[in-house]
Image 1 (cartoon, rainbow, N blue to C red):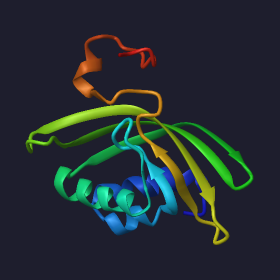
Image 2: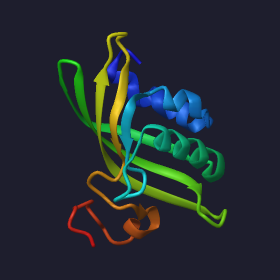
Image 3: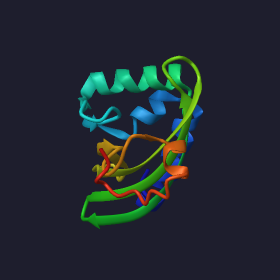
Length: 142
């Protein structure tokens, strides 16, 4: 995606379609994904995890970019997201969080993730855990 303003929308379309090849094309070769807090994955393990996650968990995500900072060919995005998916037992669950992502614009003009950290400042928390508590998303949760 050559326009950083449209990157998140394009990512959501590819992700929600379950097209792992299209999603993986939105990452640099050595990008890191932290889809399980404390377990960063890079390179082929990251790509393999994504393929399996899309296939088994059948996720659907909605996301809104809350902040972006672009310096030359590097961008940092703060993205608020909500995801519906299947848990490990095949039961529906909803998760939400605030991601901190870093992207790089390649020589071809396309923006790609260098760091995809969906739980950058949050959770993961089940969506229902925050609905009734009035949680403001503060990062001091344990």
